[in-house]
Length: 159
Image (cartoon, rainbow, N blue to C red; front, side, top):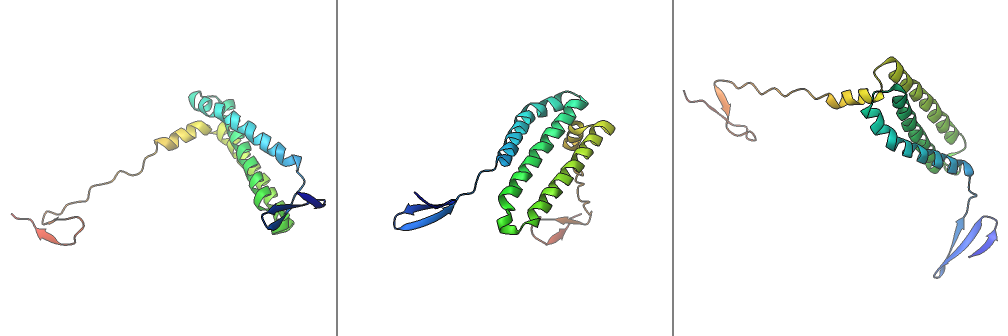
């Protein structure tokens, strides 16, 4: 490897020279990754605790950790796929602002769900209990019965 310019490296692969541009590391993304890992570890312990005991503070902590995990994940997606070199300078800023706005709105909604309603874990438990409509059997006519369900021919019942 031989450095020609400050951020250009030439790698030799057989007879082909490949130029690879190195970008300086940014400590901000390392901080976001560390926060996401802290949220992951917190969720491992908070999820079973929130479902097993009925406590609003634990429920809110679980919601906050899940929201922090999703916020850090979306920031990573934006930093990976919405680079200003690819999509321009304004679109990454707009998407980051939208992620912050939606995260604050979700945090307000979770707070309201915990303190003004039954909570996050009980709401999820209620969704697990919900079943679809029970299927009603088809009314069978007394005059005609189906012989085969996949074929469209019928016969009359013998009396």
